[in-house]
Length: 307
Image 1 (cartoon, helix red, strand yellow):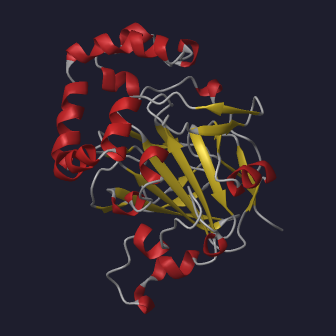
Image 2 (cartoon, helix red, strand yellow; image 1 turned 180 degrees about the vertical axis):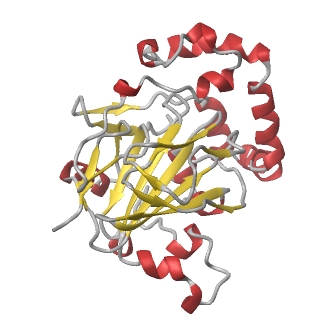
Image 3 (cartoon, one colour; image 1 turned 90 degrees about the vertical axis):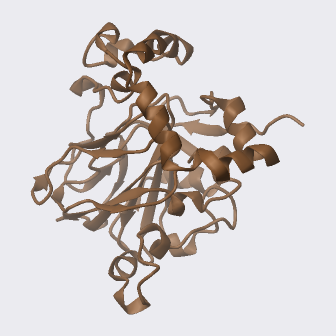
């Protein structure tokens, strides 16, 4: 039986496309076979595995992978802030900066933007959603925000975002791997929640959505004049052992300002808005109802603050 393709809606082209999955054979073996899942439980999900792979991608010999990667995935080298030949390691290339003009930020204080390049799902009411990647597959806010050990009356963030809206932004290895603030406001101190390092690709999440709340992640709150309290949750994954924050907490940040980066691998950013604080754009909502991701770039419009 052929493997089920991963399809998404391309927002700019307005077409349904099939994802070219990096390391597909390995990924499907790990998550879709009994022997692979044993290897996942014993080795792959653990920090030392991702740490070792990251160490290899930081060695100078890893630079030989750069040009074949660019060719295989048809990356636009004109976007890069520096020449493709200037990167000393594959990891340095992987979390490369882009020329600022390549990711224009949609203007307007009342407009929120996508925080990363990638494939996006939106849910206007988290509590009413019938499922995230597949029907009936959900997780709780308390699990995502690391508040499950606390009694309900102490789950401050869970209460803050109950009935609110959620954006899931999935970054594939071929994507630009820096993430940015979707709104302007005062950014707080990132909080680390330790966990495993499962893949966050749909091949894995369709089998077990709980990987998103079991993986290592960081939570940052942004107090926005237009959108209220907004939470950004960066989620690590297999071969992404570390999430690097690049901003200074406790100060006002601008919409579209760089927040941080992921090293090698696929990864994910989840953005939470409190109830009735954002109205997502209709095309994103329409595709998400079909459990289909929308491909769009950082700085594209996400939605507006109602009223």
